[in-house]
Image (cartoon, rainbow, N blue to C red):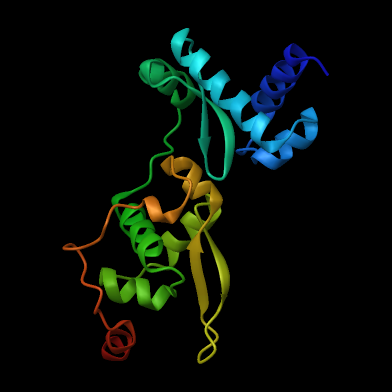
Length: 184
């Protein structure tokens, strides 16, 4: 494959991909080493930025994806959301933050931290693909929830290590089990 064809193939794949595509997968498709594919992707990303195009190529969520340029956020946002309301409520954002920082976590643990019932909010976050059930507690069989790769993508992160530090907002010594017992 020629370099021009490989670049075009990457662009075409990333234009239709609903999720970030891992480097290894792109490398396999264009039949280049991962190092060469990574260099090509970074070069393409720089070129798009230098050309001031309406889109960007970014590494996020464990892969590469095309995004609209932030310069056009208002116009794109108006186009995409016209007649729709897809924003998360304050309650959903608070619950999502608890899951992100304390995962894996049960609904009762989330409720203990937030001080309110969270069943419907958890269902909303699961439905939107931001959190998912990742197991059950051994003691009670309660569902454990954690964030998804889609969460990372929407937050523009590659890993949870990129979350802002919690301290001094929520102490690490919170006894979730003790809080649960007190609420029962």
